[in-house]
Each structure stands twice: as C-alpha cells, then as structure tokens.
Image (cartoon, rainbow, N blue to C red; front, side, top):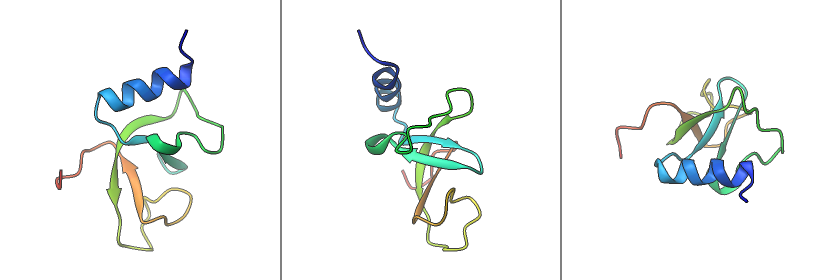
Length: 77
C-alpha cells in the first residue's frame, strides 16, 4: 500500500509538475517535498519551478531562494 506522500509524488512527477506551493506562504520541490513536515492538503497546489533573479521578489515564499513555484508553466520550457 502506498502512502499519501508517495501518491502525491507519483502524481506530481507523472504530470510534469516541479513541486507544490501555498500562495504567499511556502513552496517546495518534488526532491524535498514538505521539508517542514506540514503539508497543507487542502491548500497546497501543484506548480512549476521558476528561477527568480530579483532578491526583492514578492512571490518567493518564505524568503528569497532564487526560485519560486507558480501555477503557470514558465515560457522557457
């Protein structure tokens, strides 16, 4: 039997998503899914990683990390 985490990872990978995000709060990538161990199953949304070059980016959740996750696939793909 698969765990919920395994099912989520399987779906994200099979659908081409890079990770999850909760708008204005946090984001995580498939390789490090829910590192704070507090995935919000009702609020997290699948999304795509976008490299970010602006250290003042208002989208980068939890502080500037050089990337964020968003709903729209970046045009550079």
